[in-house]
Image 1: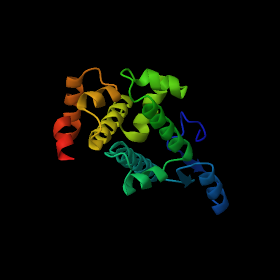
Image 2: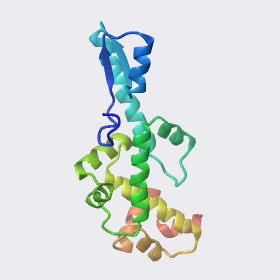
Image 3: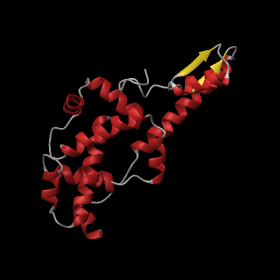
Image 4: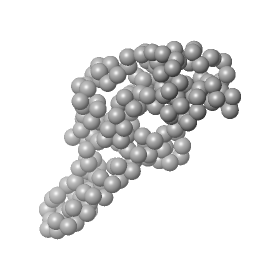
Length: 191
């Protein structure tokens, strides 16, 4: 389960009669997120489930709330807590988005096709790992890229709109203002 990209993000709790240190080490080495030995109380199991889910939500918020091109220390630490498979998955999704930044119709179906998975699996996985939808992930990546291009001072607002795959400049301006609280022109003057 932990070695399949479609299910690797799902927390696993081992409930077992095996209680030795070696058994626990083997369980964690196999990818378990928690290990409970029998007999155990229902309250302990519920607490452990709640803690695991809270940690996943916190991790998803940290990863999903990135605001700059370069990840901060908190985000880097959060990424380290993900399995290698999940980190590779996120890197691949981000690479697909970056390589196709100028496409107007880069949607979940397009990305799912590039990732060789169903759009429902892609949606569930991104939502579980990042706490945002695939469309939000694409929009945020496009906005961050637009901000970088505008900061460079080398491009006009119209050029940046085209380079980030927006169908119209007014729509680009609207989305940019929603994200950064100022128009692209104001953003360029401020930087």
